[in-house]
Structure formats: structure tokens, C-alpha cells
Amino acid sequence: PLSGWRRLACDMLSVGGSTVAYQGLGVVTSLVLRGALSPMQMGVWQGLKLLLGYANYANLGVSKGAARELAIAAGSGQMALAEHSLNIAFTVNTLTSLVYGGGLAVAAVWLGRNSGELTPAWSAGLLVMAVLVVLQRHLTFHVTILRCRQAFALTSWVTLVEGALTLALAGVGAWRWGLAGLYGGTVLTMGGTLAFLRWQGVRPFRYEWQWAEIKRLVTIGGPI
Image (cartoon, rainbow, N blue to C red; front, side):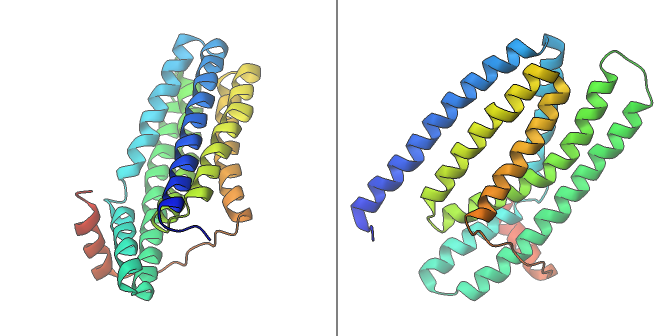
């Protein structure tokens, strides 16, 4: 078993190495996308990615608050209370991502009723984002909790798997089928990364609800 400075060095190497590899895969993917898509299509994709990024704020910091509570519980030994907070945070995270995704789906349907050169691309993209929002929030939550539990080797593998799948599925899909291939490849990438976590034994959380605990977690995680 690794401990002390040796474990620190191994964790730094795994996280640093996977980050560098992910950045390298990202550079290749970016070049593929810019070769496969027109400037207008790239503009649509970058705009959709902004909407996907804003989904991180939808739960008002509940997941961050639960992650902080887990870190404190690891030192105090009150893991039962931390697990309760994690389940509540997971529930809020799921519901808020569904609401956010539902809003994107409504916007996609409304936009699809209009005419324009890029209207189909935007409408289809918003529908895809409605799905990706839920998948991404699940993935991000699991990775955050795994890091709090110091499972850096596993999170490093998740980074590599996501980067490789993005290039293999989203990149190749965009090269072969344009924006439609990019949309489909991105959904498959997110789903495949979540499947990898399940394959590695990461258990799902339970659905729990408690208003007082939600308010407390928002107070802690909101500023974060």
C-alpha cells in the first residue's frame, strides 16, 4: 500500500500525466473539428458548449457543498452524515439538470418552428445539449466525489477515457457526418465514460430529500 510522500508522488504523476495526455488529445480533436466543420458550424458548436458549461451552476453549489462535507467527514469519522449529504446533493443535481435540460428542449422545439440556414443545426444541438446536461452533471458529480476520496488513479483513467472517446467518436463522427456526427459522438462519449465508471465499480447514489440539508449545502457550496 502506498502512503506518505510516495503516494503523493504517484498521485501527482497520474493526475499530471493524464492531464497532459488529455490536453494533447484535445489539440488533435480541435484540429479534426476545424478541418471537418465550416466556420459557421464551429460557431454553433461553441455556442452550444457555452450553454453546457452554464449547467454547472444550476444546482447552486449543492454538489460542491457535499464534497466539502465529505472531506471534513473523512477526518472526523462522521461518514454516515456525509453519505446522507451526498445522496441529497445527487438528488438535487439530477433534478436541476433535468429542469435545465427541459428548458433547452423547449427552446429547441420553439426554434425549430422558425426558418433559417442554421436553424436545424441549432434546434438539433439544443436537443442534444438537453441530454448532455444530465449526463455531464452525473459524470462531474462522480468525479468530484472520487477526488475527495483520493481516488486519483481512477479519475486519471476517466480523463484519458473521455479524451480518447472524444477523439474516436466525436472527432470521427464530425469528419464523416458533420455536426450530426459530432452531436451523436459527444453523447456516446459521455455515456461511454459513465459506463466506464460503472465498470470500475463506482456505485450509484440513492435519491434522498431534506429541505434543511439542501439549504445548508447551498450556503456552503454557493460561494464556492
